[in-house]
Length: 112
Length: 112
Image (cartoon, rainbow over all chains, first blue to last red; front, side, top):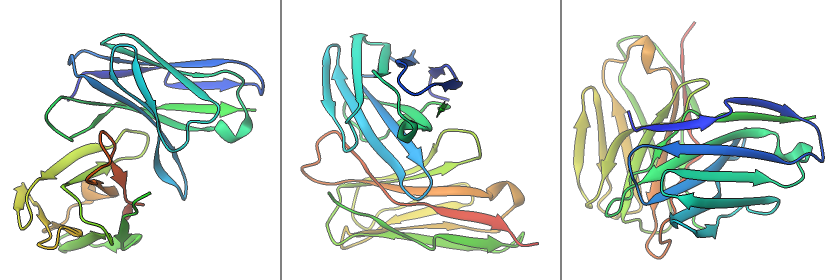
């Protein structure tokens, strides 16, 4: 199994509060991704990183920001959580020279 | 963006049956990946395909990269109860850079 952990695994928060999800890898892979998974929408890319301090937007980036200050950590922040951001969030990693992405176990976020 | 049409959306299996599912697109793809997701977990990579016409096996699973580069097939032989889950195809579209396009998934369930 790829060495990817996500924290927390479950979180319930209130509308308007900030939330930060963490993805940690031990594989030293260059690329890291944040997806959300919702019924009827499959996996949708939020943001990704192609190196330390290098990030780019995905198809559903509004309301989310990311940061990568170290190779092993990729943080996803919801500045002011909304109910529409209730979802399961997955982190994935990819090494240089391949398109194969390996996923973490996910974080279930509920915004009340 | 590019779309992948995955079919069937769901199917029931009986132990011992062979299962087939596919992904199609109106655009060509450079790479096809097949993932399986169990409830409450992240997707797990099953098979990666890199060349048109390529046929690759992983145990009872066999996947093929279509000759036209617009489709891919996944077959499961002699299904067992633990094959139940959601199977996703994903493709890397030329020009999409570091991003994958995901199909909507095929949900495999056990016949009552």
